[in-house]
Image (cartoon, rainbow, N blue to C red; front, side, top):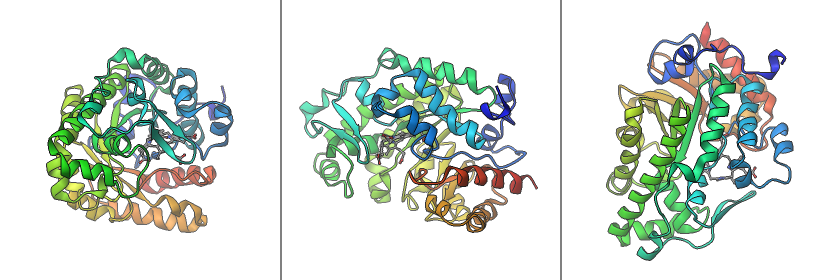
Length: 357
Ligand SMILES: Cc1c2[nH]c(c1CCC(=O)O)Cc1[nH]c(c(CCC(=O)O)c1C)Cc1[nH]c(c(CCC(=O)O)c1C)Cc1[nH]c(c(C)c1CCC(=O)O)C2
């Protein structure tokens, strides 16, 4: 195995894993350099990923521990990021309990029969660890391979999952979701409560198999006002965070367009709150409040600019993070599919070098 074939620059025994820059930053402890990872780092921007996935459906690949392990490791090897994110999708636990859905290339998750009535709720039974034994297997394989590089487990938050289930697919305005939320608050609360149980169970499986941190993606929650978030969503997200609290692994919470919700999302029970690029990181930290680390927040589109411009924008993020306790460098949303992988590798080195000065 050449130096290029394995995660480098990371401690290799489990004791040192706890001391990795990523986990130290999550705990707001001093770090040797600002840790970096990218949402959607495993996936379409990598040619080695596309090659591996040829002829294999997205959900099928998520159920194969050998593929999951390899795809999760690819960006760690290539970019030298400070954490791996488990290769899967937010709809995997729903598929695992028998919801008929697929992930359509270029579209996203599509649900055959949307969930809109009380009778539909019966299709959302609790998730048992045995439903996702391939996840347990893949996480075990991964943590053995990763050595001192932490593995981030993840799940979709109840609101974002509900949006896919109620709309039947991706949605710009979330109109059916909001119609249910405003029109039948009791059914809505029961739906989110069921989803919270499924999500919590899915995160527990990943933590028990060895994930060092978890991220709860509430990608589309920025569509809500603060008052609606507090009343109709936060109780379910808090249930998820409370359920995994006893494990003591850092809990990260992220959504897009959540400038007005950052403080409230932290209060749901996260240790780290992710921000997109619309709010400067120092202002995001102010809104999130003390006692929590901050993750973000370079605009993923910046990576299409020339190298110097990328560095200037990365400087802006690092400058805004100066004086913060606990900063994890990331993009403000996922890596865009046409991103040049070289630009990502250069960005990791740049952030490491600049922050170590
Ligand atoms: C909203 C959401 C989804 N999935 C996810 C979210 C939350 C994060 C976010 O806000 O981006 C989370 C997710 N999905 C995927 C990961 C893998 C780990 C990673 O590298 O971050 C993660 C963390 C793989 C994937 N999930 C998906 C792909 C592409 C599928 C393919 O390559 O065929 C990958 C690699 C499909 C998917 N699944 C979903 C969408 C919107 C899409 C993209 C549709 C498209 O444009 O093709 C739902």
